Image (cartoon, rainbow, N blue to C red; front, side):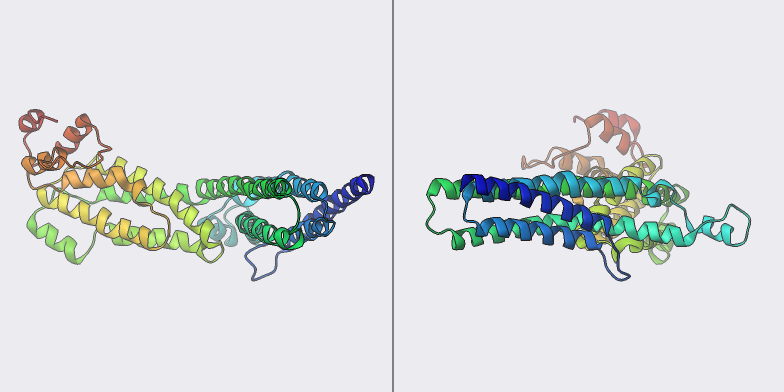
Length: 364
């Protein structure tokens, strides 16, 4: 019997690997599909093999096929997805709309828009394949545990634990697909979004924040920066919102939020601020920009804005005494400051109504 199980394991592994390779080679992406055919076909093959092993009622056979399934998913499928994303020319040779426009009017090298669109769809579909695989793995492990209990109710506790331990390893194989997702999102952000974010943030430098009451009133009716900025970020993200899974889109927003916060901080500390200018920048970043980014994602991105929020909080204080109350509150309950004392002094020095000698005398 043991020899028969050994032969079965060899045949089943061969079938599973060859079928997965065939599913990968026959990849198709339907017009309105967010994923490729690979992900459903690969998991169909794996489920079929594992369930066939389960029907053998051999604990050693079941665990052996589960281990082969883990190997196939990690080494064959996840690796292929990673290579497809890495080699896709959509992020290697990305173009913007201006390049496409100049190509159409014949003033630059032609751009093959059909190929560009095909590569874009393939990249996003494979990125979604990796995300969906995480859910499929979790569901597969949960279903197999229930089926094991139903199919093999009389096996020893030690044998049950052996199967459960192998199923836990199957669930942990999801890490390989999470790595693929993070790598792909990082590529997408670096090639497509990051180069477009800096010029949008740099527009902040063209807005005066050392303002009078009259100028502040004008800003109240005609926002000088953040409304246009939010619109442009919304437009950029809108290119991907309907093409990515919810998890992948939220992951992308996290990358964008991190980049926006870092670039904004560099701009904010280059300006000078009146009392009303401090109020204006606080409203721009905390009330409008952070509110928008939080509204479109389930991720808690406030942590990404922690430093810039603390900077504009300092810029928005009425007086140095109010700042001291924030920095060293009498209640003893203080903010978890990400700003150092020396940085706090530099930020306070951006306020045109605070005297430098008084800032230096602050006990921080």
